Figure 1 (cartoon, rainbow, N blue to C red):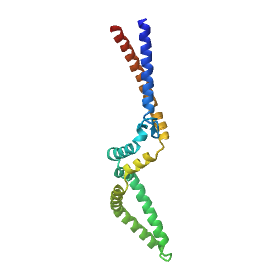
Figure 2 (tube, rainbow, N blue to C red):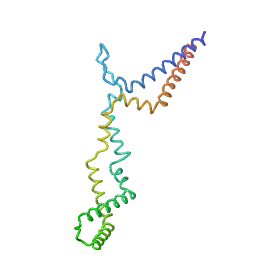
Figure 3 (cartoon, rainbow, N blue to C red):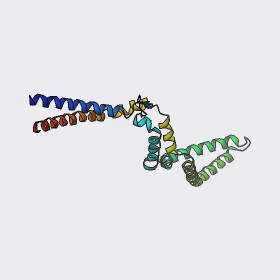
Figure 4 (tube, rainbow, N blue to C red):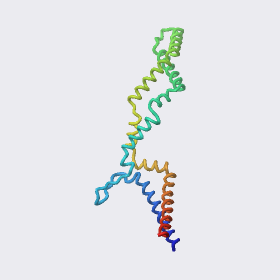
Length: 200
């Protein structure tokens, strides 16, 4: 008789623990909009929908201050390989424009000398100009572009039901473990209750 009662308590405890954790996971997102409990002044809403703006602001600040800044993004783009490619394109563009703009009456020998001189100037000055320009761009971008604000706006405007699907898809395995853990803890509590009843 005792073992039957113990088994029932363990199974009921396991079911309660499992269902409770499922409900807790659902309540992270649901309900998406505030819901009034009838005959009370209590409103319930999912944790993420209720605090979406606050979470969006926090995530934006964390990303900008701890993970990546606009300065790092631009500096990464303007590394040596990209710099070389940009300088080659600039040199080619300048030479093309000069060739088109030079009067046709200028002999080709003089044209070649002019183009060679331009090449020399570009070789001597381009990197300095490029570095100064890069500094200006980085400073201006850092002043005007706020990654935190961009991320905050994106998260606030993100559809919550879609966000729920994405998070559940990413953390499906971990959430399933939480559900099972709830069942296991409930099962063990049920067994403990049974032994307490036996001792009383």
